Image: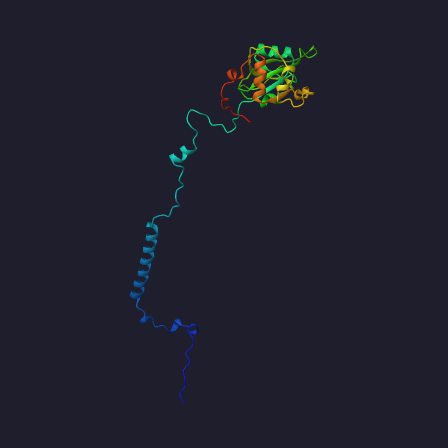
Length: 236
């Protein structure tokens, strides 16, 4: 009967250092192997040091052609808030309109700043005077006409609440009563109660209505307000 020899697993084999014969170990071979390993490690380190560094791609800015595509034309200021010329009717007594024309400013009868802030340089305005003065006789006529100047609003007097005024250019004109113009004015819808159109102290009117009033005052709207108003910065 043949016996089969069972070899122990490799993991189970333990070499007893006491059984190793020192005379069988070649020191020269060991040193050569160690030197070879050190040389290989040094070669790997040198190769890593001399390898070119990996850099992220540089960010490219817009080219000259791309910048030119979004640059506004030369000689003209770009303004996204520009709007066409507007025409206003301002309510003030006749004596206030005369004083404003003499000093070159526009002021509402209420003295408020809000309506003046909505105006822009180059806009046209007409002053409607219900009375000759605050407590005077009834007049019900257009008493002044002109253009708003491109200037900031100013506060008159020392009171913190105003009145406020704005620089304006007044044009020589005649007084024009409103009643003969009522049927032709489109911004006055209720002809029987036409005074309600002026209850807020200022009214924005169509260019056609403004031209009719200007003509009644002896002015030509096309000559006084030619072409489109220049671009002026500010809210619409």
